Image 1: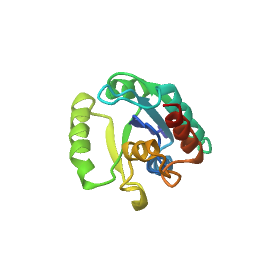
Image 2: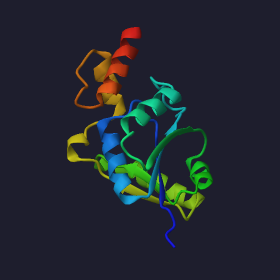
Image 3: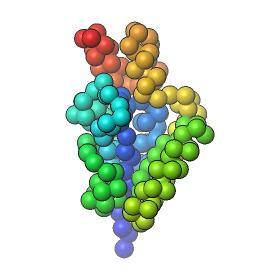
Image 4: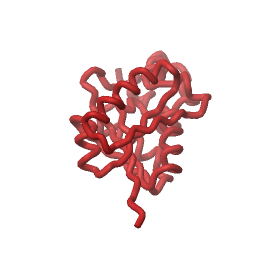
Length: 163
């Protein structure tokens, strides 16, 4: 009997970028169900609330029947265990991401040994892209249309015009 392979792709996603969406798409080919888990990160000051980010991602992944998006708080591995996940998906853009992600994967393995971390690389055209860069460009009215979906682009424009 086939056990459903549930993967969790955690992140802040502030905002979700085309690079994130590329990793989500790749994960949908590999796993039966992908949960995009949006978290608050106390080390960051997010531009968008968790609810705004969840809505943004839901809109962006609505074509994928095997993807759901939800917010969560607390320790990732507790959340993953509660959801019955067997895999944590992490995106790697550059070699500099690897050191941190590798360390986190080893800590997570110590916490919950039967949940595996899988690293996925986005398309090379997104390797330079991250949410911080997108926000910085958008803040100064730069064109981020090649980095995010049209919906996210509108939300960024609104956020920065309100400030």
